[in-house]
Image (tube, rainbow over all chains, first blue to last red; front, top):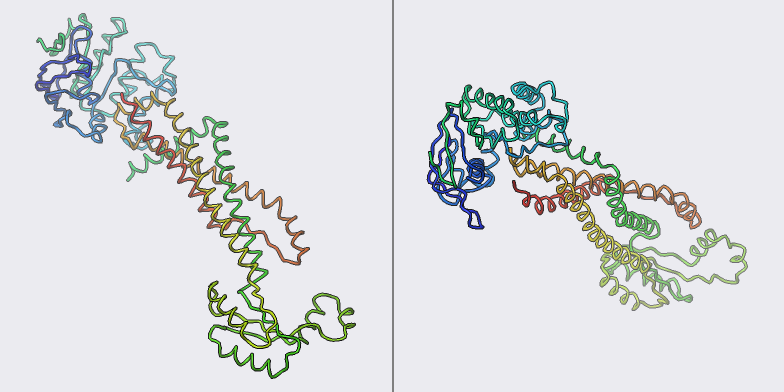
Amino acid sequence: MISFSQVCKRYPNGFEALRDVSFILEAGEMALINGHSGAGKSTLLRLIAAIERPTTGSIIVNGQNVGTLKGGAIPFLRRNLGLVFQDQKILFDRTVFQNVLLPLQISGFSRRAAIGRVRAALDKVGLLSREKAQPITLSGGEQQRLCIARAIVNRPSILIADEPTSNLDADYARDIMDMFKSFNQVGVTVLIATHDVELLGNMQQRIFTLSHGKLTA
Amino acid sequence: MTVWFAHHLHAFVLALKRLGSAPLGSLLSIAVIGIAFSLPAGIYVFLENLQALSGQFSGAPEFSLFLKLNTNEDEVAEIEARLKQDPQVASFRFISSDSALEQFKQGSGLSDVIDGLERNPLPDAFVIVARDLSPEALDTLHAELGQLPQVEHIQLDSAWAKRLDSILKLGRLAVFMLGALLSFSLIAVAFNTIRLQILTMREEIEVAKLIGATKGFIRRPFLYFGAIQGMVGGAAAWLIISLGIHLTEEQLKDLMELYEVNFKAYHLSMEDSLSLLLFSALLGWAGAWLSVTNHLWRIEP
């Protein structure tokens, strides 16, 4: 469950990215955050993962108050979140397989247990045949799927994606969205930020709309 | 436990991989560490050899008490009695002028010359071992012995050994200071190598932090790297010293044979070698730790 209550985020330069944002996303729900660029979508997602801290208000993720979390506890919060970043953050000095392996190494999985999980995650996003490939040789859509595989390999209860379809054509984008829907169907809480209005047309999910840092719908 | 083990194994393997991924750089760093450490350790070995050598020349300090040539047996007996009563004297032995001459004949190979002498030029002598070996006590005893009748000359045999001993002490101090100074250079080497690594791995560290890596997880491979590099550097120093001993041993042996000393070159003992390796590993670890704590917090996603 993710709960925002009266959250404000003001940056040191005075820019207010979020103003008085309150919402509750129940466990197992799926929602989209929509809004123009600069509306505060990314900031909202970064607050959930404790990459940034709220100026005021409280954020509860899985029963933990993220805003007041101690530095040492943040890694363990993030292990329960699957994060798909806007700038992907793929490591190009290692294979597809090793990229997906990294979260499991961090959690301390034995190599044997990890290999099975990595293959399962790659299989879910349709990249199993490319596990030995270098990420640079993947297409844009494949790279995005690699990011998703890395986000779900830890089997997180919450999946957060920032503009996962931004550089993809419509067919690829639909694929990716279907993938998120299928994760949601098996009980994962999914929160996706997107400015892609066309994508919203055939969606029945909840949609939060941000405008200049305020939640409007 | 298994998680702990998996983490450490992962860090250890990663550190080895990083060491191997830049072989020339690693080799140069290790050589720098090895050379830096072989200096104090080499001097240490040299001093140990010198001490072993000095041990062959002298044991406990001994007074040689030479009596006047005209001393008669009664006077010798009196001195003997007084030495027996002296609480400062641990033991003594009397060397008569005749037995001294006999020893000298055998030792020097000049028996023909000595036989040609009209009379025995050597005096009677006492060799005295003091009970208390502190310099002050030796001085008091020295003065006391001077009060005895018929004493011509008193010689403290340990004087040169004492000088050597204080030189050795000075040498050890120099080794210690040199070691301390060069330890800083090892820390600096580790610090800089790790700093460069962190800079080139910035992206990876950032991603690891974003997907839930603890500080320990990120820090661990660097610490292992520093420790391994330090330890291999220590091993290089050990090799350099071994090579040095090996190259000079034969010639030293020949030289010592001229002085009729049975010389066996002293190498670093097992204990010393282990201390060297552990100490260099510890310093590498410390340098890496300093570097990581200094640079890692700047990389925030």
